[in-house]
Image (cartoon, rainbow, N blue to C red; front, side, top):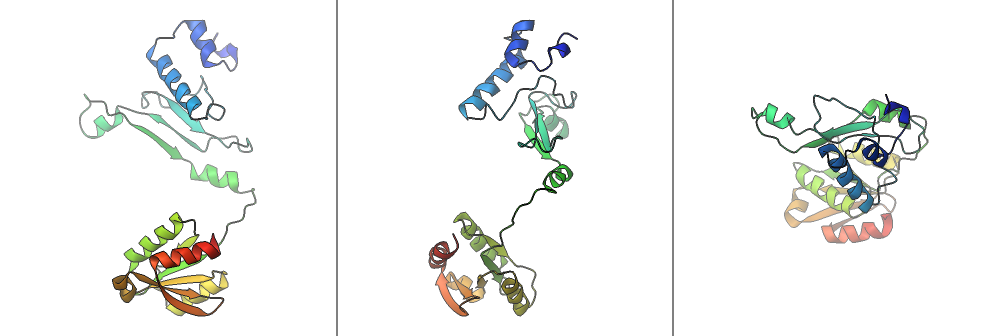
Length: 215
């Protein structure tokens, strides 16, 4: 009852009041707080002595994630340390496997952003496989994204003219086509939907070009 009447006590005040500086739990909290401080997260991550989750499940620090603007009050994610679960799953309850996890509430997140206006930028590039070249398409798309180029893939196997029409309707200027010939030559075929041009370029060349026009 005394703890509850403290309102929202700090970690330091609890340690001093109950003389528990060397207990396992207190040392874990202290180590975590020092790490958060060094990472510059001390003002974002707040210690809450009243947070409790699945006492039979978690074996250490637990946490919840909240909207930083305080516009949405419920947690949108939660998790913690659970060293005993893995051992139970593999039939080795005598062994502890250091494990930590987190889950996010999609319904909470969708509710949180439902009334927040935001603009979703359309991709600058659409990458389409011609034939059985999906692995290469995914690889090229990953390279483009790693260079800051907004990229979408179309592996729906629709007719090419339909995919091109969709790209044009969405204002996507560039379409990259990758067929067997392009895969064999380590090239891509780049269509400029505005200039109505088509060129065969190496991966390096297309990244340089798109970085100049899309980044």
